[in-house]
Amino acid sequence: MKEPGAPVLVAMSGGVDSSVAAALLHRAGRRVIGVSLRLHDASTEGGAGRCCSPEDFRDARLVAGVLGFSYFVLDYEKRFREAVLSRFVEEYRRGRTPSPCVACNTEVKFGTLLDQAAQVGAGTVATGHYARIREGADGRAELHSAVDAGKDQSYFLFGLTQEQLHGSEFPVGDMTKAEVREAARALGLAVAEKPESQDICFVPDGDYRAVVEREAGDLGPAGEVVTAGGERLGRHAGVAGFTVGQRRGLGVASGDRLYVLQILPESGTVVVGGREGLLASGLEATGWNWIDGEEPDCPVEGSVKIRYRHPGVRAKARPLGGGCVRIHFDEPQRAVTPGQAAVLYRGTRVIGGGWIDRALQD
Image 1 (tube, rainbow, N blue to C red):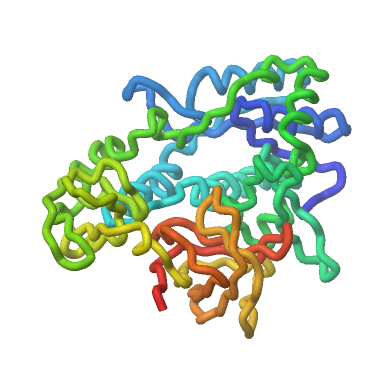
Image 2 (tube, rainbow, N blue to C red):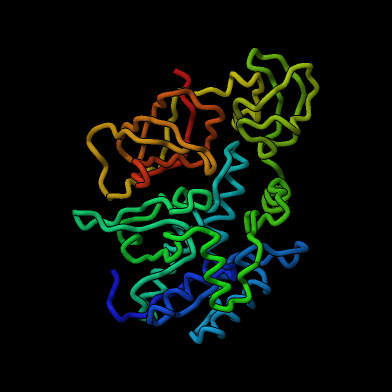
C-alpha cells in the first residue's frame, strides 16, 4: 500500500520513459531509489536487448547521478528464466504463440519488485509503463489505458492483482510520448532522444526460432503440413516454426495463398488453408484474472483485444469458473491465436484478461 513519505522504488530500463518517470517523482519531492533488472545476458549471443545491456544500465545510472538519487542493478536472471524464457520456449514447442511481456510484468517486474520494495522500506514501485491506475468508488484499484493510445501498455498488465496495483505507480500514463521526450529535454536527460527497442529483450534480432532451438535443442514435434481437407503438402521441422495466421515461410508450394489455420502439436500437424478459415466467432481463455479480484456471476460485455495491436471488438465474456472464460464476438475475428492474451475493456478500464486456449467456430 502507498505510504506517505515512504521511498518509491523506480524500475529503470535506461530508456526515456522510465527515466522521466523517475525524474517526475524526484522533482515532486519523492525519495526515489532507482533499480535496473538484469534479466537476460545475451552477450555470448552477439548482442543484448533492452533491460539487459551494459549501455542501458549506464544510461540509467547517468540519469540517477544527474538527478541525485540512489541506483542499483538487481540480478533477476534466474527468476526471468523460470517465469518467462522457459515458458516462452515451451509454449512455442506446444504450437502456441506466447506473449512474454505479460509474464515478465506480472511475475518478474511487479511480482518480485514489490517484495524488494518492502525490504528497503519503499511504499510503492513505479515504472515507465503507459497505463493509468485510478481508485474506484469502492476503494478498489482500477487499471486504465494510457492517454497516448498509440503507446498504451495496459494490455500487458492484465495479470496484476489488487495488491500489486495498489502498490504501483505509472507516472507517464497521463502523458503522450512527445510530452515525455519534451520533459526529458527540459530536464537535461541524455536519454531524451534515445530510440525505442521494438524487440523482445531476449530476441534482439527477431529470430525467435533460433532462441527456441538453442534452448530446447529442437523446434518441437515435426510433422506434416496439410490442407483443411486433408491434402498433404509437405513436411516441417517443428511446430515452433509456425503461428496461427502466418502466411510466409510455410515451406510448401501451392497455387493458392495459404495461411496457418491450426497447429496440432500432438501429431506435429500444421493445417493450412484460405484466409476465410481464420475467422472465429469467439474464444476460450484460461488463467483469467479479473482486475476487481472477484469473478462476476453473470456475463460481462465490453471490448476484447486478442493481441496487442488489435483494435478491439465488442464481445461478451462468460465466466466458467476456475479461471476459464468463454468469449463471443459481435463480429467474427481473424487469427485468434492460442497462447496470446485476450484482454477485456470497458471504455478505458481493463476488466480482466487471460490466455487464449482455443478459437471457437460456432
